[in-house]
Image 1 (cartoon, rainbow, N blue to C red):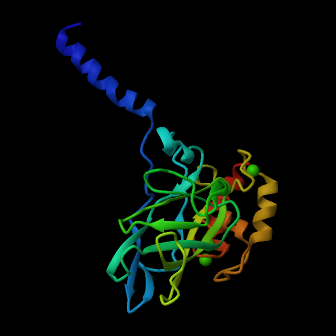
Image 2: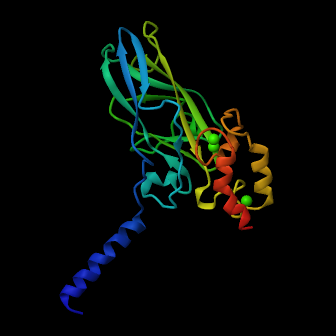
Image 3: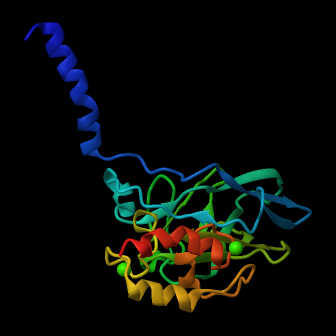
Amino acid sequence: MSSLARAIAFLSFLPCAAQAMGASPQLGGPMKHLQVTVINQIVTVSVDGDPNERLWLQDYGETYAGAASVLDGQSYNGQYGWLIGGIVDIPSGAGVFVELQSQSEGLLAFEQGTFAPIFGTQGSDVVWQWNGFMTHNWYAADTCGKYEAIYEVYVGDAVGNRIPEYVSDFVTLYWQFVPVENLGDFDQDGDVDLLDFAEFQTCFTGSGESTMASHCGCFDFDGDDDVDAVDYQAIEPAFEGE
Ligand SMILES: [Ca+2]
Ligand SMILES: [Ca+2]
Ligand SMILES: [Ca+2]
């Protein structure tokens, strides 16, 4: 082998080595910012675009290096990002804190950068201090369905105690996870069979109905908060293949 050929062989080996070390997690779509202001002692959180939009939790089938490996085997999303949206007028030594109020069962949250569990994940504190830099935390789940989390955003002192003169704000974040690898495989056992179809029928709401159970999000393929004929068209080929 000439030295040039050897060099090319070496170069073409590099991407494989990088792959073995693990890929970087993907946000899953365009950034969607949670813009925070504190003006006249009032906290306001404003969500970019449609505040009711559901973001897709996706499993890319990748393995991640180091601390990011918490996302291995999970469907996840990192599009939501905390961002200063204008004036943040707080006393010196004070901070902006985010407290989990409630969330769907099975939703996991990890901090950007450290991948430390946050918001109650794995027994972590339900309060997380935001440092004011743009922060895209990771959200993950291993079961299909609809997910949401409600947070209170408040101004606290150096140790996180609320400063009562400041009015807090609340924000709800939304996600959804459908089994795209195996469309319609509700019970995620690797096939699409009559058991899955029975569940689809139970979940069928008709067009425009948004009161479906959280697990029925598994069948809401177009993400419009119903399970209707449009969703059936997506799942039909899978059932016919049985
Ligand atoms: Ca199945
Ligand atoms: Ca619909
Ligand atoms: Ca739908």
